[in-house]
Length: 189
Ligand code: UDB
Ligand code: ZN
Image (cartoon, rainbow, N blue to C red; front, side):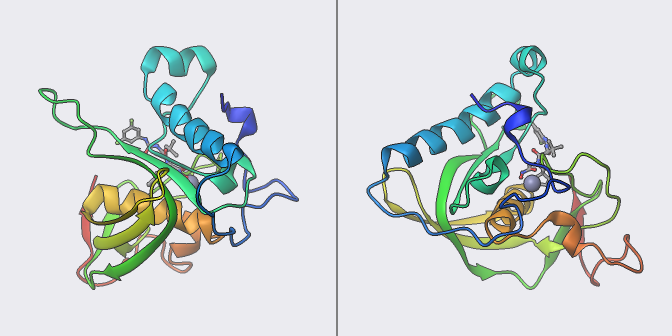
């Protein structure tokens, strides 16, 4: 099981966090199947309050392979339901070789800014992203998926895809004025 000690931090030297990750080939090798399983397991366990406490995990909505020092184009995303009547996740999948094939001109950002499981300090500021994206990826079965996401799940997927390209959330924060976002940016979260 992945624990916090296995997650590499942005201040560590010699990690793959700033590298461009390699494409994954299909059918998935056994080690890649295990990686997919372990990334999603971290998210599931971390979102269970009791288990998160027990294992000392930060509740995560996404985790990319480079964050466990594996430079491959794979990330798990688990956006929990916000409906107390229905606990079906808003988005749950392991996205492999993901590509954003189209994006809205409209930008969106989280009101509270972003954090990262690989960043231990608070970095204040808005992280402008595309409000809506069309995402193409392969699932663990090797089936190509093409889906449209908006708002929060779109933000999470862009954050995870950035990890596959060696980009961290604070790279997008305006250096002169951290709370400056492009005109017309919608805020939520
Ligand atoms: C997170 N968690 O996982 F809506 F169950 C952040 C951390 C950095 C604060 C742990 C988060 O947003 N928690 C959360 C939100 C919910 C429901 C829930 C937990 N990430 C993922 C990450 O670092 N991936 O690489 C940071 C998010 C910031 C914006 C998108 C991803
Ligand atoms: Zn992150």
